[in-house]
Length: 58
Image 1 (cartoon, rainbow, N blue to C red):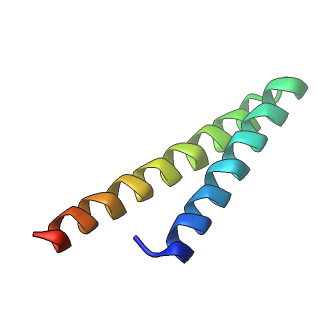
Image 2 (tube, rainbow, N blue to C red; image 1 turned 90 degrees about the vertical axis):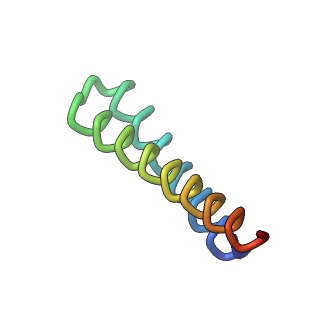
């Protein structure tokens, strides 16, 4: 995984967490769901990158 990918995924994850927290604080379930989805999407991207790295090593 390149450094740029790591930074992008971390930023995406942080954005999702902040959006989820804002939705929780305001009681906006839609905003909370969008944040949770964005957070999960970043986690999946990161897992995919780790799998690709594992295959490149072998």
